[in-house]
Length: 500
Image 1: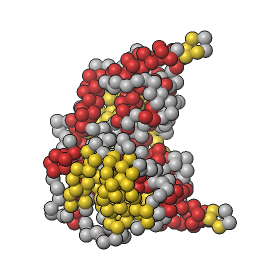
Image 2: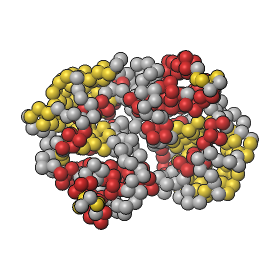
Image 3: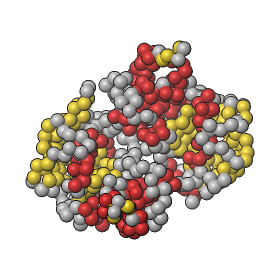
Image 4: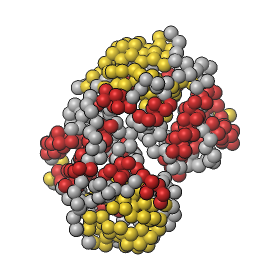
């Protein structure tokens, strides 16, 4: 039904796609895997019409097409559910669902909100999301917004006569298990009307859902395998070009933490988020907060950084009680925050690599109000080399880097500024296996440098593997503390038993 032949795409200093062949049949689910920077995102944007290929052809049902923009791709039945989400958070759910297609609800220049709400309700029912369409999108959880994204794409069913091609870019990255199962059930039900391209770094999910899997490396397709013939180890080897380190979480590098307390919580509570939380974070320690969505983990991180002010209790940073909570104060106290939504809160797309790295410490590179740009660039180049950031130069728009390299830029921003308390909120979300290993290396190196880390991990295995200490949270309350000594770490069951 849909086919790309010999697709080529180049950017300054980067050959992103190299003669890529890709096809998808009617009602088929095709997986797409590869390291960050392998070309997956570029290929998706060519399919979606955001990029025009430099060479090759695109055909739908045998007819050649050339999209000038995503709107034209949508008119041909191609929709995309974005990993970083494309919703406008200060609009209502129904405004987001029909953004750009409001005219169907307009009469005499006035939008009939009641009719739009009813239509939005019908779209939300497709993804089994029972919420008020007039809800402001910012008030939804990340998982709910992901389902609204899918509902938005499914409006193509009513607008397009032909079959649909729906691109799913890391749609399960922060969904709970039951939400993933719901999504997969919805996808399978829709294959009588649509074909799906599923991009994910969770290999077990790719093989569970996909009929065939395309494996990419360095801008080229290196293998195409069917679900029945697929082998996870073999696919990962082709993705990264090397065997995966058996000591995946670098447990053999874990060293005892120091005596100095960097962060101390004493019976801290934030109404509706968490209650009576107490802990100490030591220099060189990885302290992991474990719990289900809404357990209070993220709110605790935001309080440490200064974004949320607690209602009761005491927060002490490096021996000094915190009385005023704001982000500037967090930065001044040497705290770095790597947020879950890196493209929204971590980097500034449109600014280049060196500008993003110095954004939190511009005073260190200014004299008389004038920036010493050459020093900014020199610093950025040193961290690019140190962290192995894949970018053609320091002038590259940070928004154009792969997810793994964006994450490294965010880490470089805080580490170059001397932050010795680092808050990591799902730092490996959406990263490929090679980029995850790089992050794990950096975690151990930061501990060796005396940095204290509070981690909200992407998986329980990651939490167990990386942590010196684990705090299990449930409904905003601390249930259990575990020590994570190498060779004597808690099991998955130990954690789950106290989480649910």
